[in-house]
Image 1 (cartoon, helix red, strand yellow):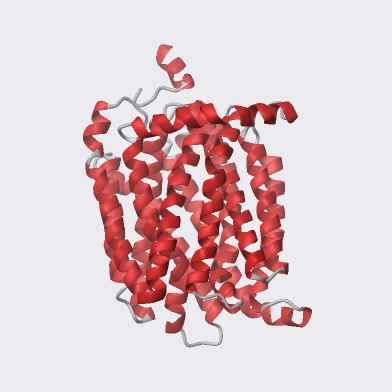
Image 2 (cartoon, helix red, strand yellow; image 1 turned 90 degrees about the horizontal axis):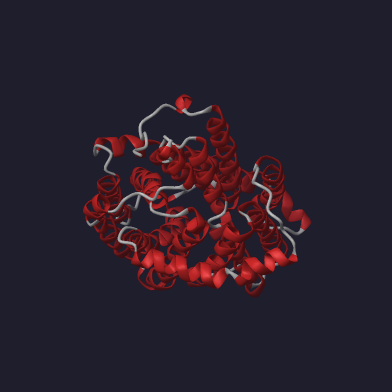
Length: 441
């Protein structure tokens, strides 16, 4: 059954509308919490005496920890439920942020980054799978692409809004914390602790999942089945004519964009001459993430421009993001940097929902969390290689050289989508149980 891809939100069933709103606000809080510390994290590490390569190692530890636990925990979410595994991620994040706040040594910082990676692994493939499966049941005739774009836009706005708050807290509250033995960059960490507790409460109350028996035996069974789940899901992804290409593109683009996310703040900071540099960086971070949110918002019109062909839309979107990434590396003034970073991040954001909707079309429900974790696993593999390889180049030859290489790699990742239209034409979309029932009626 063909799904409606162009529709107004009010056309959805009321239960589906409420489902989208609950998850929209959840993602606003979730990514807002990330935005609080993103604006100061690299600056905090530099303030503690770490150089660019030290910072690359720390982010590589984050990626490595995610890689180690990503797939097993995604499989566990398919076994015991998405909500309890996600709640575990919130608790791990709480411990990690507290560790970064109260301990300053490289070893403890590395452990904190490892815990954040563990928390990210717990988060991966949990509530996204929960949302998509429920939406398919509540609105089986409607495509998930427009609502995924709507949700991703909310997450981007959360990142943007709370990034400004993180910068303001640093400049306005940070100096007051010095008298208590904290650093000026610790204010957003304190705010993140509070935000994490709020997110925990919202998840417990408003994210409703069908009850699953969760006791020692259930958890043990969940882990004992992981090997089989991973094997089946891994073979499925590698052999699938569409999923395999999308994962390869993900690896290439994440290899480059991890260096953008990590190094754009130290790249732009020398261009800012103000005592409120951190607040200005907070505003720039708002622009960075709001542009991603705006990109998510325009993804549906872009797909419509290509007459509903999501692969062709992705080809244009990803290749343009790579071109603007290269142009960004040539900027030396804030006035040129800002429009370039807007264009790069806008097209980064625009790629998410068409990518996700294609991915979900070819993933069976019983493998969804695991395959979402596999996607994140591949993303972190690319990021790990990028942080070690391009991070080393950034330290030795300059950030701009690393970005030019990264931009070329992104374009290569975009060109892979040339292969997809013919493959999609020959590959049927997976029928889910609720859709099959509707088709039979």
